[in-house]
Structure formats: C-alpha cells, structure tokens
Length: 462
Ligand code: NAD
Ligand code: UGA
Image (cartoon, rainbow, N blue to C red; front, top):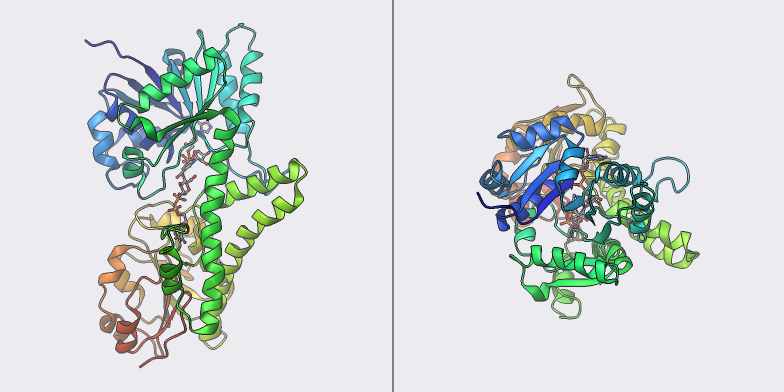
C-alpha cells in the first residue's frame, strides 16, 4: 500500500469543510483526508447517500473519494493526532450578545478548536484558518497553542475560502486564486510551501498567492464586502430606475461593458442573502470601529442598510399594489433558498419578505425545488398545521387562487412555466412581482398579468 504523503484533518463538516476536503481528496489521491464534526447527524449524513448539503456535482465528487482517502468522523481528537495539517472550518457567526453584539464575529468555535488541538497534538502541526475570521485571529490561536504546556511550536496559516454556494464544486476545481498567508520566518515559509504544494496539484502556480498572515485574513472580509457593496450599489440604482422608467438591467449592461467596472455581480435583486455577506460586512464595520475609524465603519454599514431597505421596499410594493391589504389573500412564493442551486436558506431575503407578509396576515403558498418543507417552516417560525403557510411540492400548485406570485429565487425551472396556464388559476387582477427579473415580463403581460420587476417600470395588465 502507498504511504499517504500528507494526513489532513478538517474540523467542521459544513458547506465549506465538506466540499473543500472532497476536492482536495479527489485531486490529491496520496493524501488522507478526515473531515470531523461534533454534529453526529451531519457526519452520519456525509456517510450516507443523502449528503447534508446540495451542490451540483458534489455527490459524484464525494462518492469517488469516500472510503478511499476521504473519511467523515466525529472522533475529533484522534483525527487531529493523526494529522500533519489541520484545517479549521468551523462557523464564525455574528455575536448575538454582549460586547460587539450584532457586529463582531463570535469566535467561540474557533477558540474551542484551538484548545482541542492544543490538548490533542503530540507533535507540531500546520494549522490552517479556513473559516472567515477577523484580522489578527491567528494571534489568538497562537496564544492558546503556546500555552498548552507541552512546548510544541505549531505553525498557523491563513487560507480563506472564496467558493460561492451553488457553484462550489466548479469554484474549487478552478479557483480565481488561492490565498495563503503565513509568518515570514523560515518555519512559516516552510509551512506555506506545504500548502502551496498541495494546491499546486491542480491549481496553476500563478494563481496561488502568498502574503503575510494579516493581509490574508483581512482580504477575505474585504472581498466579501466589495462583492456585497456592488449588489447594494446596483440595488440603490434599481429604486431610481423604477422612479424614472430606466431599466436597471440595461444600466448594468451599459456600465458593465466598461472593463474597469466589469459585468459580474451587477444583478439587481430583492437583496443579497447567504450566511456570509451580512456577517462579514458587519464584522468589517466592527473592526473599523474597534480600530477607531468611525467614518470607515459608517461607509460599510451603509451596504447592509441598503440591503435591508431593498427587502422592505419590495414587500411594501406588493402590499401597496394589492390595494394596501394582503390580509387573508393567498400569495404564491417561488423560491426560498438565498440563491439558486443550493438548499441553504441562511439570511435568505425570502425569510424577511415572507415574515413581513405574514405580519400583514397574508396566506403563503411556498415552493422551492431544494429546500425541505420543514426548513421553510422553521425559518418562518410556524408549525406544520399552521394555515398561514402551505408548502407545495411544485410551482404550479402554489398559484391556485393566489392574488400574486412573487419570484424570490432565480431557479431555472421557473422560466419554463407557461404564463397563460398560471394566469388562469389565479384571482384577478393577477400580479407577478419578479424579485429576480427572471421571467419574460412581456409574455406575462400578454397573458394578462400586471408585472412588477426590480428596477423596471411596472407593466399594467394587457
Ligand atoms: P457550517 O455551519 O455549515 O459548518 C460549520 C461546522 O463546524 C458545523 O457543522 C459545526 O457543527 C462545526 N463545528 C463547530 N464547532 C466545532 C468544534 N469545536 N469541533 C468540531 N466541529 C465544530 O459553516 P460553513 O458555511 O461551512 O462556514 C464555515 C466557515 O467558512 C465560516 O467562517 C464561513 O464564514 C466561511 N465561509 C463560508 C462559505 C459558504 O459558502 N458557506 C464560503 C466561504 C467561507
Ligand atoms: C459569497 C461570495 O460570492 C463567495 O466568494 C464567498 O466565498 C462566500 O460569499 C462566503 O464567504 O460565504 P455566496 O454567498 O455563497 O458566496 O453566493 P453569491 O453568489 O455571492 O450570492 C450571495 C447573494 O447575493 C445571493 O443572495 C445572490 O442572489 C445575491 N446576488 C449575487 C445578487 O443579488 N446580485 C448579484 O449580482 C449577485
């Protein structure tokens, strides 16, 4: 049997840990990769045929490596002991209490992992921060490890993850760049080289960037802040378009053609969601405040405020159009995930929009191709028998008797629905509020709908 070149352990078997390690195992067959988590249900799911997360291409990737050089287990300490390299891929949510509440990152899971490593390691390790963390977190990890009392000197590297959900496998296979930060000591450089060599097995060398630890840690927060800022920028313009009969998609096309601006990430929407944009921008705001930079903090905070406004604005448009009341009215909701091709609903704009409509006493008929009904109900805080929320098994069922159809996630399958067929089943006048500008608005209008998109003048019914 071939001796594995590197033993890898990844602590945290979530949206990042699972797919990232599956890719490493697939591309580096001589590495042995163990993904560990305290959550037994999650590990059991990774070990079953029904993976805990949905990502196009992930099932095949995992299947090919599982049991060969990819393993999922709850035995964290043994896996750490076996490993040469330990990736830390635990969650780093926004703090919900105390100092820095609603802004700072809650680092208790990172700290717990550092203590586990300090306790279990019987030889020096390379510890890799994969989680998104505030700049200078490596110092925290270092300090805990240095006080373990066993005199061992571990290396801490930063290697943030830039994959987007829904395209995780493609992003991991062909990343724009891999970022690795480390200490500029001989030991630090040696540790960085181990990680560079690992990625270089499938990523072109010129796409692997090495920096100092703090630049790498900070760059992850800044990348997400810049991406979120682009969406808030185009969403702010969508409001102006609605007031002036300019079309936001045409404006995006026109400005995106300037190579200095570029065409990506200019899709106006109901607002951005996902587990990271909001938490990472808030974390940046907190850091700016912490380092005495209130003007920089206020600048970035506006990105979040604009996003909250965009979600509220959409719901208010729906209520106003439906004669200022949605009480007792059925409303069809297409899409609940925060974007297409994922079953993740964390911070999905659909949650705040649906909650606001429920406060207005609307009756919601919801359909999402990948989100489980129980996850939809739990995100909305309603029980299975609650008459205010009905979760449907297909898109068509939701529109029966509905006054309006809201498109909240850009799933491809929604495009193929026949407008005349859905119009027929709905109350009249019937509206479509397309929060993703996904459907063919002219075709909807011809079928008889009143149509309101994002950043477009409303189309009255034909
Ligand atoms: P997640 O919540 O899906 O997974 C984290 C896992 O860590 C959980 O299963 C949890 O049980 C486990 N965990 C927590 N403490 C543990 C401990 N002490 N020992 C063992 N396991 C423990 O989170 P995620 O979406 O995978 O994100 C992980 C990190 O990666 C976050 O910092 C996030 O900001 C960052 N990130 C996420 C994405 C994304 O698309 N989701 C992309 C890039 C970066
Ligand atoms: C985002 C980043 O794109 C990743 O690089 C990063 O690694 C990740 O966050 C993270 O740190 O967690 P993700 O949130 O998975 O990835 O998905 P995105 O494609 O960025 O979409 C985020 C939200 O913005 C979605 O709700 C999406 O619908 C919305 N969006 C995106 C728009 O409204 N308009 C756009 O033009 C693009």
